[in-house]
Amino acid sequence: MIYRFKDEEPRPPQVIANAAAANAQYLDRATGGRGVELTDGEALARSLAGDPDVFTMLVRRHGQAVHGYLLRRSNRQTADDLLGEVWLRAFRSRGGYDQVWSSARPWLYGIARNTLREHWRVGTAEADELFEVGHDPWPDIDDRLDAVRHRSALREALGELCSEDREVLLLVAWEHLTPAEVSVSLGIPQGTTRWRLHRARTVLQGRLAGDIPVRSSLPYSKEA
Amino acid sequence: MDAFQLLEETGNVPPADDATIDAAVDLVHTAALDEADAAAIVPSIAERRHRRRVGFGGVAATAAAAALVLAVTVPAGHRNPSSRSAGSSTTPGHSAPALLSAATVRLIASRSAEALADSGTAVDTQTETDPSPDGTQVPFGTPYVENVTFSGSNVNYTFTSSTHGEAGVQDTLVNGQEYDYLRQENGQMGWETCPASSSNSLNLPPDPRTVVQAISPSAGLENLGEEWIDGMDLTHLRATTPGLITQPEIVNDLPPVVSLDVWVDSNDVVRQMIWSNGGNAPSHTVFITELQFANLGTPETITAPSGPILQVCFPG
Image (cartoon, rainbow over all chains, first blue to last red; front, side, top):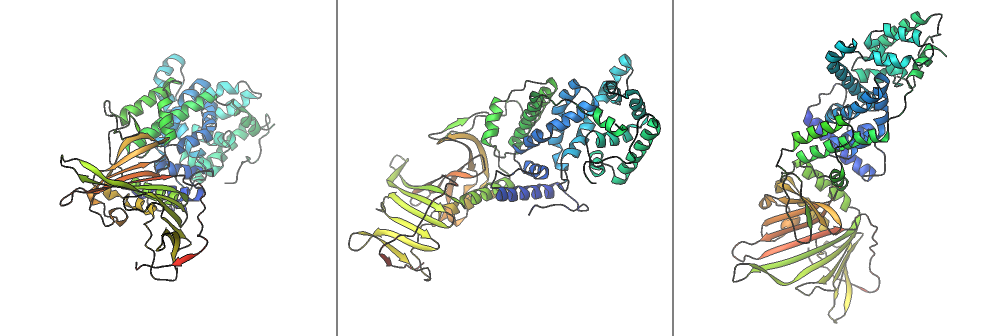
């Protein structure tokens, strides 16, 4: 059987490596080495065990989603430029992936978020002087929202959210993550996620009252 | 349309170009290959070919990052051509020989045992060499060649030539029952068997698949690089401490092991082994065994012989 860690179990590197190797051997036996599509966790276990091919499968599987994440928060050029960096960081930090996570996508979004924030932080010094923009990527998003209906009301409402609340809301609205997956992506407790989501929705509702109807509860693509 | 739907709509963006995704794939692939190089883990055929053809063009940022990875893991001038063996070609560009980790060696042994547990064929060639007056080793007689077909626990052995006249002899093991096809007292070839219920046996040759058990960390295997052998791209491993190999499957009743070379495929499955025993006083005879596995996974039919079968057992 696939070895899984309990949440409270300490995970020294050698234990993780041994488990990954054991999982890889199990999967080889179970799949005959081929023919059965691996889950994200299984693929990462094989990658940790030394299979250099398998991680590229994850790039193929989630590449568009990660690119979409970057594009929704920046622009085409930045998304194209940062995509490879996000995947390199993911590859190097794959030892930190928890096998209990059913999908790697929230984890990848977290890496993409950090990569994007670093990108903006590095660009701040120059950009501040020239364009008076801060390290928050919101200005680029704001530009794109100008192209849709009700843009001004929505833009103002989102602009009033703090960046943490906004990120939670956008992970649900744009990336269709559940609150549990948002917690994985941002590395925060589920209770915090739910509170931020509630707060973001409240602000949104207050700002848009009488302009755009707001649902009493946000739809989730999956149950938390 | 409510606010949340509007927000969702603003999240609709065009997909990335295929070239952008491909660039990310190539970047990660390169990083993975270099990590495997650094860990002396056997790379696969696909990866090695990929590495040869993958350039570092495309997005400038990804190319720069790839170059950084290479600079960190492979110091300049550290890649040497690997060894060559007769009848093979070796691809230069691999890292200098490095010992495989114990985990990797066990993984190779495990994967090989699993692959060989299915079906396939093996050719076992054994040669004896003796020292000549000028000090070189020269072959003694003709090689002992054993062609083996296996399917699960069933095994069939045929001997095409040997120094000791075994040509034409056939041994078969079907469902635990041993059969031996050899020349009878009347001069004709015929089958013999020893009842499975007997505590004795026909003393069939050892199953060549058990030899992979000798692939253990104690052998101190190092990676010599890639070689093209019989249409396959194989990774050549060599024991740095062959004298520490004690597995009976390879030592048998021969003198100590003095060399062991192993070739593994992209699935880390052993495809060829060559080892030698002896070479020391007083006889200085060297016993060289070459074992090649092929047709792994190809269904093989091994059936019990029909017709008259003489019941014979030898103590064993």
